[in-house]
Image (cartoon, rainbow over all chains, first blue to last red; front, side, top):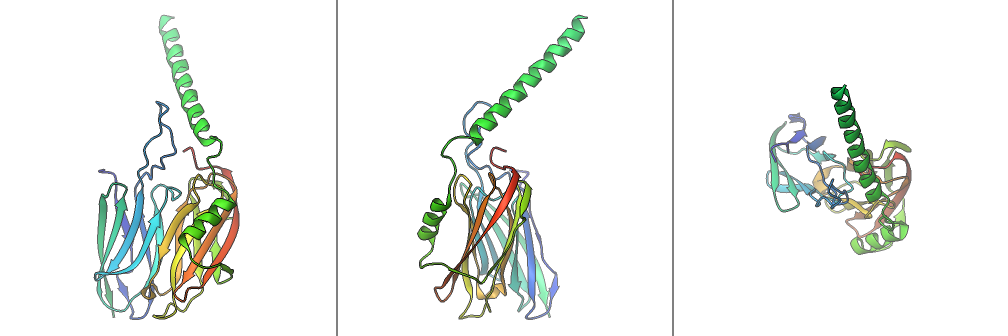
Length: 108
Length: 156
């Protein structure tokens, strides 16, 4: 699991009321469960099935993913900046493992 | 002389092995009945969404031709004021020609500011991509666009 690295890009500063873009990416194979290994057996499915974005503890955006999402899933979305605070981004893998990244944004 | 022969045979062995692996991939990819279709997408929509979808409000941003089906950029934007009492709640993404119709669901809040998202998806071949948006007032909108895929992204 050492190669699973979440990354996010947010503006560090924003004006109150501004809609900011948040870009996220996590390095993950997103094994579909459709592929067959060299032994002819199907490689079991292992994907990130949910992404959540919280700001100061409030869920502002979430997404459920199926195997049709590409490897190293990329996601860009928006949020209206109103106050200074901290984002918590969470990726949840099949089986329940979680990958978390935090980032702060200053709103003036 | 013996050495040359050895090298050759090793190379041939490698060649054989990779050809074997390719066959396996192709066999998995071409398995009959493994793909969804328009009807499967309709069924998936009915399962997730209440109400009959109307046209409009959705702008899709997809390539007309995708060279690599392993990673096709997809984006959408749903027209909405995104206020506390009028916003886009959920957007579902479906594919008509993949092994299963569901691709992703996106959950927005009034805090989102705009109902736009972009990601990258896998496509097994040329097919329609369907976007369904559920509004906070219960209305449902739908849009569809075809993407031509040169190399399918299913077998990997």
